[in-house]
View (cartoon, rainbow, N blue to C red):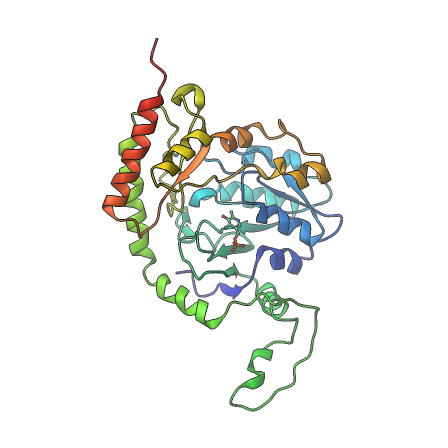
Length: 340
Ligand SMILES: *Cc1c(COP(=O)(O)O)cnc(C)c1O
């Protein structure tokens, strides 16, 4: 899947920040339109998350706004490929080079996505993937980091397993007992072999899953294109979008129902939905600790109030998809304000 010269290790964004030496007094730029984990890991490292508003079409960090958020303390940019749509990585890498920043991608939603012919995982300094139950490949829990940098990869491996010197996992091998040395107060962030075997099996089928997701995406687009809802932005030829999430924007003025009312109505019809995401800066901890407030990142907030993710998985059957489409159309058509 990824070019073999890349190092792929079990790991996390937190360990990525750590091996880059990012900590207290530093700042890391990211998007507010992400899962809290992205920003939480920055706080765990000791650094401050600095948000940059999103582009209203792609919903990803607006690269035109990044440079004005850079200060002497900025050490890294952490772009998030929301819904599986790659960020404008050429621009991000250019800015990072110019200001000597590292790029740590949150690719939790972007396994299999591509940007200008390169897989996500081959671009930034470190790229972090998740195999949580909602992702395109699922091992229950777990994740991996891809990097071109051997030192980063070696350190992440060690930090993820108690900080024991390299190959400590061989200490109970057939070659007999080996002493290890603790070279860092590490963590226990490893995945189990059982989980990894689940992931390896699915990895072989990723192209099949991708096609199924694409098909459902197209059915949704066709079924909703005449409704007064916001559809996902068209996908540019420069990227491959792994179709992790299919999101609609529900505006009460246009649809006659708010996003939350729409979700309730879908729930009544047996259709589960998600919100990706309430912008991180609006959460209590972030408001109180950093003084963030509504109005700080208007585009992320606009989307955060209206976005809803429909079911999308390679496991959905045609009857499932038809039922979801019918429910969405019914709710919107029943509530749509009459045209004057
Ligand atoms: C799911 C997700 C995460 C968290 O991944 P875990 O493996 O559950 O920790 C982080 N960032 C984004 C954008 C996600 O969607």
